[in-house]
Amino acid sequence: MLNKTKLTLIGAGPAGSLLAIYLAKRGFHVDIYERRPDMRKTPISAGRSINLAISTRGIHALREAGVVDAIMKIAVPMKGRMMHAVSGELTFQRYGKDDTEVIYAVLRSELSMALMNEAEKYPNVKIHFNERCTGMDFKTGEIELRDDDIIGHARKARTEVVIGTDGSASAIRMDMLKAGRFNFSQQYLEHGYKELTIPAGPNGEYKIEKNALHIWPRKTYMLIALPNIDGSFACIFFFPFEGDPSFASLDHEVKVLDFFKTQFPDVVPLMPNLLENYFSNPTGAMVTIKCAPWHIDGKALLLGDAAHAIVPFFGQGVNCAFESCAYLAECIDQHGNDWQKIFAEFENLRKVNTDAIAELALKNFVEMRDLVADPKFLFKKKVEQALQQKYPTIFVPKYSMVTFHRLPYSVALSRGKIQDRILAELCESIDRIEDLDWDKAERLIKNDLRMPQTQ
Ligand SMILES: Cc1cc2nc3c(=O)[nH]c(=O)nc-3n(C[C@H](O)[C@H](O)[C@H](O)COP(=O)(O)OP(=O)(O)OC[C@H]3O[C@@H](n4cnc5c(N)ncnc54)[C@H](O)[C@@H]3O)c2cc1C
Image 1 (cartoon, rainbow, N blue to C red):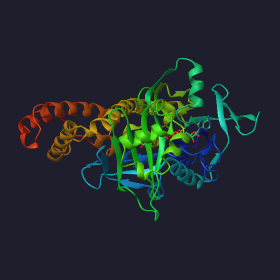
Image 2 (spheres, protein in one colour):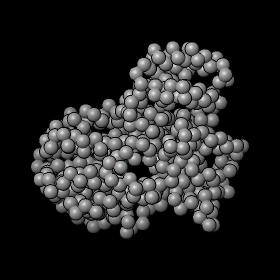
Image 3 (cartoon, rainbow, N blue to C red):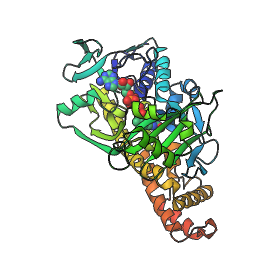
Image 4 (cartoon, helix red, strand yellow):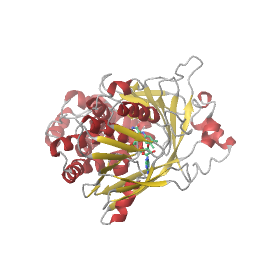
């Protein structure tokens, strides 16, 4: 049975398409307006095919929507980090406690296309391509739409309820900003990123370990590589915009090649298109966006990156957006068609948690690019593992709480801070696991963490 409210989503990215499925299942008629042409029919531009890591929160939301199998078909499991030293030495660090705790690599474009296919299976979902929303009048509910390929093409469409899933440069958010009493902050990183590729071998084989997220940590910058299903790896080079070395200073083929040969010697033979990729792919910026309120008059809501863009270093942007889709659906189930109430409750449940993952993601950049190669940090990780084995329901590593559990991000953040303090105290004057003071560990854990972690 069709529900009477017609819902309009702006943006058919991962969040918009998954949300459409949740809403269609509840009987709503959903129109999605997507700025770009249909990427299933038009090739996407080079250098815009980020590979995302999907983990427990995202998978849970996909399962609830009944689409997890469609996504798992295009995903590659990654069991841990494979660190590459300049010397070529490899160190593997497992992500979870065993092979049941893995994360999955999937190309963002493949993910979006698979979710669009799933959404379009519902007769009450319609995706309109080449329709860029340029603004919304919150009084009348009218949105303005343009086709970027046709000069002067603009039209208005009437809406009942709009959900802006239009990413970090959200047009709906821009108009909320103009409406007044709207808090907004954006903080750019001094680093940018560029996509590079390790192609598959001649028979489609993986040239480096398939089931790992590869990291070349180099203190102030890093390169990472995630496996694709076709045997290739999507790589991301995180590097400062300015300074030396930086994207600004590596401005010539000879400089780039010399730099890669010195810093990433094992990668150069694997990347025959390094120079072409480096100079033709765009350099992306990374930003943390916070805003509030996320909704206006029960007429419009922001969800996903539109409400809370975060830097990518905890691999949680899309997982967080998917989790939000499931939360919004629960709020709808509770409050029917009272959109003011639904949106207020949704924001109340999510904002504190999206702020928490924003903070966690910023901190994880330092861990990934710098600390993973630091012997002290690696020793702390060993102690952390030992504590987890002894107190599996109380002492759960921060990475696991975020990645393999669904407890609120804010709880992961606060428990993580306490655990960091405990680890620092226990590791202060030892460098061998045999010297760990277990009595002290027991005392600190029982005193400071007390409650077992749930979910
Ligand atoms: C380098 C990098 C690595 C990342 N790695 C991970 C990771 O490992 N794991 C993870 O979970 N997340 C990761 N992320 C974050 C993830 O990509 C985002 O959180 C996710 O794409 C957000 O989904 P979304 O649907 O909210 O927004 P988007 O993916 O930005 O989709 C927005 C959609 O709206 C459309 N649109 C935009 N403006 C308009 C408009 N005005 N009118 C109509 N349509 C519009 C766009 O074309 C797009 O289709 C990474 C991000 C980056 C940059």
